[in-house]
Amino acid sequence: MTDRERFIAQIAALLHHAETALVTGDVEPRLASWSHNEPVSLFAAVGPSKVGWNDLEPTFRSVAARLSGGRDVEYEVVAFDVAESMAWSAGFLRFSVSMDGGPVVPRTLRITHVYRNEGGDWKVVHEHSNWEERRPSP
Image 1 (cartoon, one colour):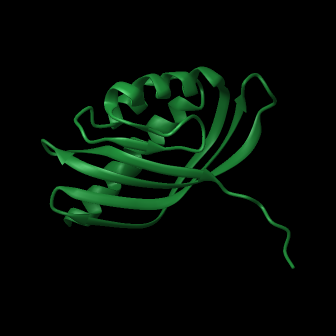
Image 2 (cartoon, one colour; image 1 turned 90 degrees about the vertical axis):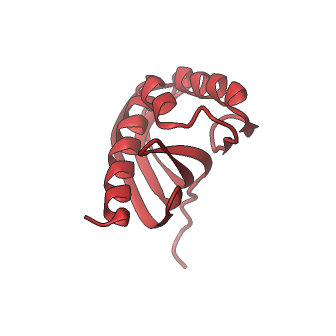
């Protein structure tokens, strides 16, 4: 197995597990998937943008508290690359979830992650996500 194959297998499993838990309100797998070492940053679709683990952890907990009833999580990696101790991925996160007690509805995030290899494990160090807007076909 190549470094790229090992990376994508680990990341796909890690993020699917973390995001599946998050949309049900369980933040712990997401916390475990992120580096707790600086620098880390978040430019997120839900919640404020933050820099530094001391700000990211409470933000993740706050977001998880707003989510419930999540299901049907699909993490699709469209592009990625790996270079020794750093890597990135870009793709889509599709899921259904209730936010703030509302109805469970399907949602899609465009999501980009940057990773750092820490002791043989890939950890997220940056996320940029935004909602995919559905536009009518011309």
